[in-house]
Image 1 (cartoon, rainbow over the protein chains, first blue to last red):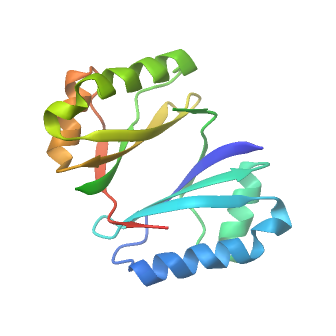
Image 2: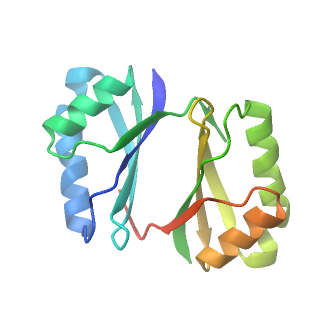
Length: 82
Length: 82
């Protein structure tokens, strides 16, 4: 398993409820790909959302986010952390 | 206090030790501005580092990172999280 940070750049105006609903939609299907979405942070003014996950691959992250209705703009493996 | 995610785009090849040293350099002076850097994640291949902090302002985050020798490329306030 690898840690990933994916970024969505098209989320301007996202609300707390929408972020929560999007996260629940990921959680509902993430086991299909062995992914776990841990946290997400949103800047509604800039429309940017950052999602932290543990997953077997970037493609697995991408597939879950796509099926949940919010394909990410970027996915970075982040093997280093403090 | 607000939560911030700042992003560095010029960190290609960063090592675990360099990330740790950079984080320690922030921690050593962050109290001067009432900032706390909580976590950081690095993609050495793409050269991207994400830093999560609590701070009174984006400018305070910027000043600490600049004084520590690694000015961020972007700083986003992320008032929403899950």
